[in-house]
Image 1: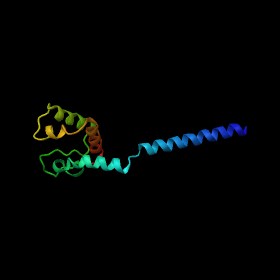
Image 2 (image 1 turned 120 degrees about the vertical axis):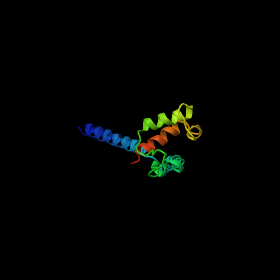
Image 3 (image 1 turned 135 degrees about the horizontal axis):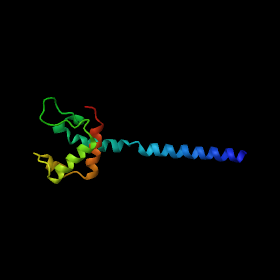
Image 4 (image 1 turned 180 degrees about the vertical axis):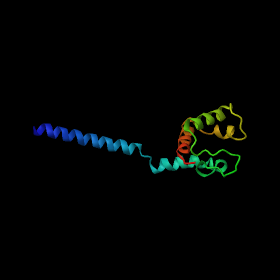
Length: 111
């Protein structure tokens, strides 16, 4: 009886320990957050801080747009299939992973 309780307690402790590890693994580190912010900051000159363009601007605000839409548009700029003034050049400097990262960031911003 005591062995069964001990086994259950050890099993529960192991599950809690593994869950805590997963939560920590999913939480971004300061270094990761700074990396994402630095990628997003490269867009600020045209699209505004955190993707919020100045009201009345001809440039699109990126904040709150759908992540898949942002990825698709950046990939189209990168491939040269979407016309652009400078985005076709800028987008070629980003890896697919960086495009996904920055799209995730802007999709999470409030309009």
